[in-house]
Length: 274
Image (cartoon, rainbow, N blue to C red; front, top):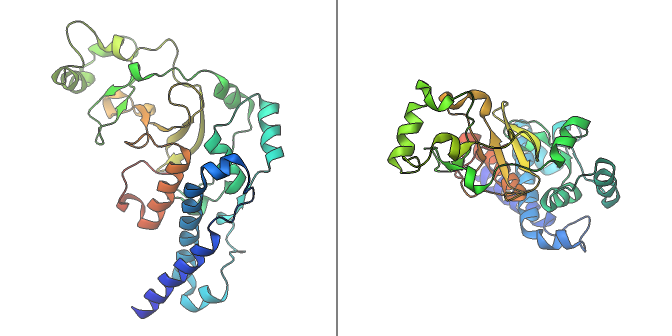
């Protein structure tokens, strides 16, 4: 017990050392997001130290904090010039929170997340082209679908799917909530001019399977959404916010690192975390 208390104090002392230690301290985005950047860095440090404590014990952690052997924690910050070149070459504008994350935290760092996959910025032509296109979903096209967190989301309708037996539970729920009534239809509620496979950057996965997306433009720009459309409506597939609060990128990353600290699904915060 005393050793654990000493270790927790050691973590707090080390966390204090990283506060406001920015690579670009005078940049307007860094000043704007300093608090959440500090929180992410402190939580990431706690993840790394707790891992070393579990593997090596208290004495080893005191001796050496650096993780040369663990490539899973490596982060590669981007310079301002690298961001400028990326946006110019690919004709895409990165959301401000993504920019400042790359500037001060960086690509990589899978060890800080539950799925242990690193964050990698897209460089392939087709996904980047799709990122530039308008995100077609608006607030008029997301609805209460009886999600466990109460979020509003979009569901796909294909080939008259509104009449399929598998949708009956959703239909009945929408009718009960008076979202679906005699003056409208499922198609009116959820139909889009194009399929929503554009206007976002996929930066990671939930549970190694459901894509996490940063919306690149439109009404929900900068928010993190989850895509579970591959399940189909009958199995609860939807496209919508990854958290009830519609968290943007930095707040979502902070929540994801906390989920890692607290054991994934045991986290005190509600969300589909990286």
